[in-house]
Length: 175
Image (tube, rainbow, N blue to C red; front, side, top):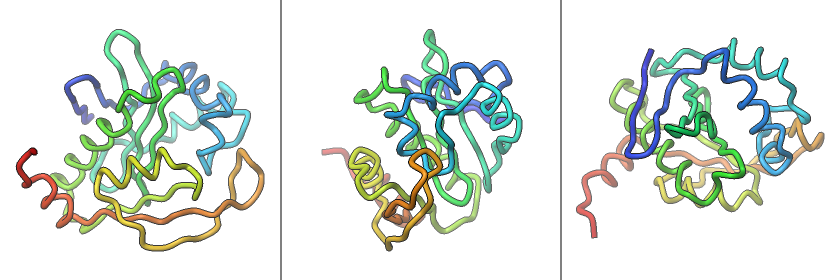
């Protein structure tokens, strides 16, 4: 089971005992409204099922629990057909999403031969789009997706991060 460590976070596989905190985090509508595939409200039973079916952390599909040592689960970052992440509202604005995503991207490109990572976000999710832009994702299109929480179609911005672009960013000296 792959674990990743950053300066502040532990990124680890999901465990059954994560379900209550997972459900609590995504049952906050301020979080849930941006998570296209998750219904709202999101119950403990749903969290148990979601975590039980979560992909094991391999290079093609992975889901990491974002664990803040001493506090526990504060979010999640997944990489399946697209990269997605969420952070519980009490932990917004502290750079945890960027830090976790950066670690998963590093891990992904070092353990797979895939040429890119795709991601998307609601067109008005400025925070998520800013995080992705800082990580080097570039817009490649737009489409409509059905939001389970909002119960209607939502315009999405499609983005992509290529392995080449990621490696170029990593090689630049810090200013």
